[in-house]
Amino acid sequence: MSDDQPNMPGRIGLGLLLRRTHRGFAAAMAGRLAELGLTHAEFHHLRRLNERDGVSSSELSDLVEVKKASSTAILDALERKGLIRRERDAADRRRVNVFLTGDGRAIQPALKACAETVNEVSALYMTPAERAQLFDLLERVNKGLAEAPRHGSDAAE
Image (cartoon, rainbow, N blue to C red; front, top):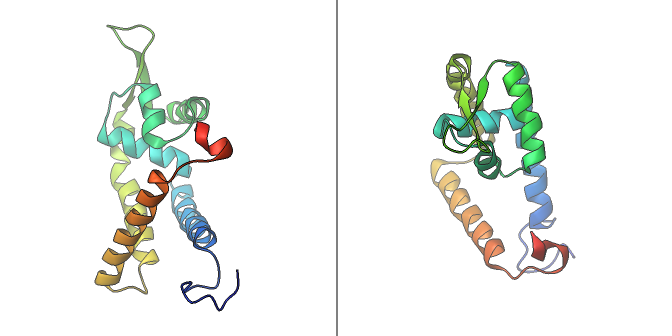
């Protein structure tokens, strides 16, 4: 790709720019979450549980978009930290439901503050209108990618 292509406003590809942005965002979150003794993956599990407490461990994996084996390890860590508890479903013993503990609920404002701070830092050089436009454009990028035909090993996912 050359830098003088007329329809390419940036000097690097969109995918690379988004990757760099994601890595920067993740690093900023990781630093703030480390102060709470949590990882980014734990944050996502706790955030989703705050929205849907009592969901099955399998459904929670889907909500946070990670494989069930990875989610199980994260839930083990959160349980050791006393932030969640797991219970077998009375109606279906195969199903394990996940609940926030009192400490898991108590940490939610701090988690929200971490996310809000990183979101604000990420938008320091944007006007509110530019920030809204960025959200709109990224939603369109995601929609285009979701609707595009998949090829090769991606097709099975």
